[in-house]
Picture 1 (cartoon, rainbow, N blue to C red):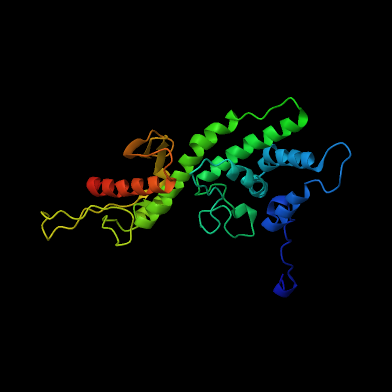
Picture 2 (cartoon, rainbow, N blue to C red):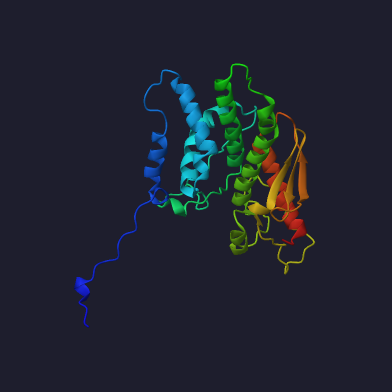
Length: 284
């Protein structure tokens, strides 16, 4: 039997489901879950806060696509409240990187292609704040006797926020100076760094010893993957820890700081000492 290829029908298109909708349509659907009409028993603000609570505890847990859409709405909504609680003189930049290839919000039309992780570590601190804030807001609406507990946010903004922000700054400055890589694959692909400073660089690197023979090259070391680094943070001291993900890390560099010191200044010193550590160890 001879089948004419021209008469063959193309395979049927699979039906569109909620999880396969383009990201911009899914985001619009999430926005439409907010109250559109007035209610006699509840104010619009109370209904909005209940919807935000529902996004946090229910809708975002359905699948990957709804998680990304729900978190986009939650982060955009609570970012002003988060920023208002940042302790002076700390800085903040908690949103996922929109232009990074590692960002879950990189331009794509398929929600299945979106990744949940983000390079920006302060994003996790913002998400913790949202998880506490949505609950506190709904409880306050439900009962006049409920008082928002300040200690719920104290650890976040006294410790977690400056620590995660400092980690992001170390990543930014370290990548610029060639001592930190955004991933393990990037660390292996990157050329080794020999810790010689550029004229405009704020990172100190020890110059070659005058006793070194001319035939020898300076010790060179590859950049450290950012996933292997963490920060220990206290009001008077900060340190840079290194080790496998999920295991105990060891302190490789440490520096003192004052209570009113900018995080950017602490990050600069840590990267400076990391460059010196790589130079002296030369073993990574």
